[in-house]
Image (cartoon, rainbow, N blue to C red):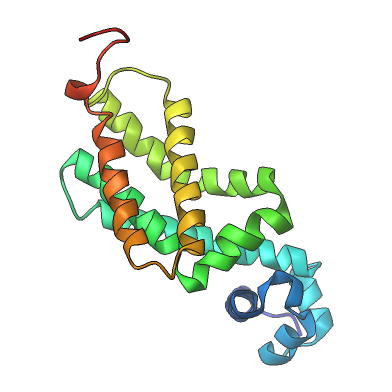
Length: 203
């Protein structure tokens, strides 16, 4: 009997949810697809009907994580009406979400290693980086900072956020690391403000 669209959607959601737990706890290399199949109470054939391989299932899980992080970034930024505060809160939310145990391994460690940097960056561009660029474009149009190439600026800031998250993931034992990172983030963004930017050689 053919399954309804709603049933298929629910099966996929369940698989991604269970797989995410396994990838978080064991990492990609040590996750056994058979264990996911067993917990989902499905046949291996049913799983392969939706995902052709463990790697394809992992990609769906990472996409889910990226989407969730982007929603948190957007929600946090929307708590303020000040453009600079929105930018800071969004960047802060990205770092906070990325280093959480339920996201860190999948998003920062296994993501680029399993799928490759090109695929990982493309997924990042479709979610958090897209929101960052949209915010920067609005702020630039409103005259909050001078006209500089948006794509370069977006990658510059996004790269810094990703590197900061990676560093924090390895510095979790140091209690001051997170506070220091947020302090540097604030100072870094402050430097882009229109009234603090000077031409080279200006005094």
